[in-house]
Length: 350
Image 1 (cartoon, rainbow, N blue to C red):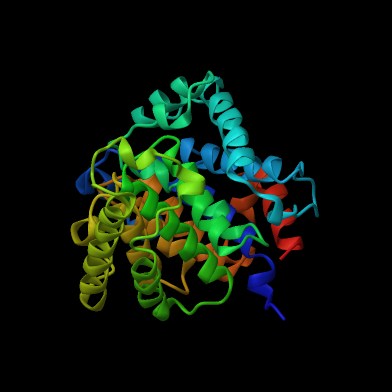
Image 2: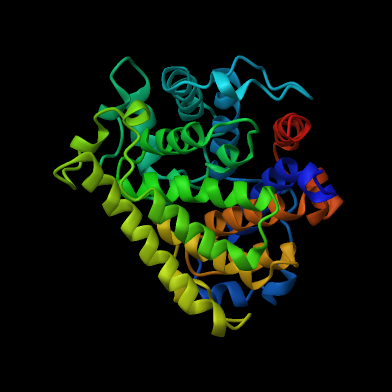
């Protein structure tokens, strides 16, 4: 039987992502000196209003697309039949959501150029493989992938393929695909009760097992575009190898990482997918039982603060559930209703 945290893992993860996003947006593009001038990082306040960025907007878009692709609207208690997920159905739903986001008047939160360019090209009938940023491995690929780790009932093949598909529709580099798959797997492991101390080894094992697995049913001929391998297996292996190198840096940093050190100095600034995951993992693993501290640490960094804090929040919330977050914060974060609707649906079906 699931414990209390596991019973609200999806809700906790989605709210954690949004809260980290809201905390990190005001500090994004600021250096450590400018952030320090705001006050002690451990006391970084949640802005009021707690406005989020494209990280949360696109996470919700992926979540809604998953539910549409499985024939469910996402109403409270409506978990969806994950067994019906297909590449064709998900691609159609993602395209609709991404294009709607592209045209939305609320798409004014400094979104990434790669996402904007790809979503503009998706607004039509061209194959998605021709719309993606073929050489991009930006963190826009995995900042939004948490729903793939939270939706119940998916097979391993569906979860991995769908995680890579949603990444590949905007970011076609193999590292974007692998890092998104790995991020979703990390969220899933924590939601299922994996202890934080065992997470790096579990992620390394997963990366090794999938290093040469190209999900052709989900990705089609994407591997031919960036010309990063002579075969599909070589293409995807190059992405997993960069993720494994990022895990190397994470594991090297963990033993001596001081709480007041900028995580970006150890594992990268997070503008690219594998660094966003590694640096978020460093924040989470340094404060596994202090979720608010973990997202504050992610937000008070010199790099892509909102994405780092958002992924750290998704990880912490998946492990600890909705009780991880102050109620007053959850009550005023932007898109609260949508976050609660998705989280409740998946927690009910878990």
